[in-house]
Amino acid sequence: MIISLNHYLVLAAFLFCIGIAGVLTRKNAIIILASIELMLNAVNLTFVAFARHWGDVTGQVFVFFSMVVAAAEVAVGLAIIVVLFRHKESINIDEVNLLKW
Amino acid sequence: MEAIFFIILSVVAIFSGLMVILKKNPISSILFLILALFTTAALYVMLAAPFIAAVQIIVYAGAIMVLFLFVIMLLNLNRIDEGRSTVLKTLGVIVAGTMLVVAAVVLRSVAIPADSAFLRGVGEDYGTVETFGRSMFTTYLLPFEIASFLLLAAIIGAVVLAKKKLD
Image 1 (cartoon, chains in turn green, red):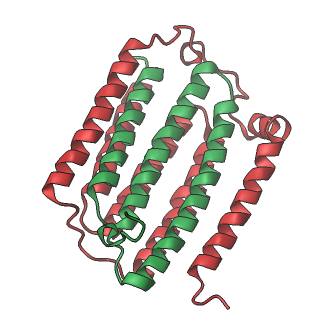
Image 2: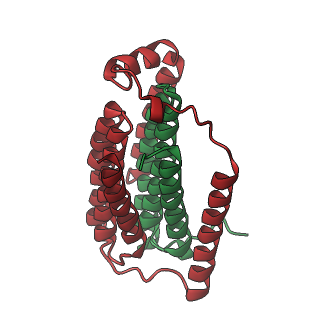
């Protein structure tokens, strides 16, 4: 059995959907952030698999940039969670409905 | 041999991914996320991307996960999270399942060119730090500089947000 692009794409699709399920089913804001990380990671895996498929290193450069964005997102997201906890004494996202109509 | 490694790694990755969203204790969730990120790093090595694998371990499994664990322990958030109501949970799983089905349909219907570097193999220098760096600091120099600005903005944003009081 030769492992080809399709195997990696299927694996990435699985990981991405696990991430979606996590975002939609959990209430803890930190776990939601972790699920988003899982989804980003699945997309990165797709990028690297396609880079290998075309024999072109550009996909890997793009993964590097997406990691930078992920790091920035986590830093700001966790800061928001810290502020949220100071205000509400909880990080349950159901209690954060200030911007909801 | 490659197939065996791939199967083991993907089983571990999917299992730890499921554990991230199923574990009720946030600390164990994050520890399973670290495992998932490590298996992805191993897959990057199999895809001839050793530099990306190293960055993955240093940045994700090192820095970002320490940040996660620090926030959980600092705020003492190590509480049991039962998740949303059963209706919302079912809906969420249905949405994710539909997404998976859509992805499967798309993957089956799109013809991927048979002429793949997976079969041909890539050159010795593919994915090394040298080729990676040459690409990044010539063609993608401007995005690289912009990324540094993004990180600066993120650092300032995080500090301003987490500060106790703004004077």
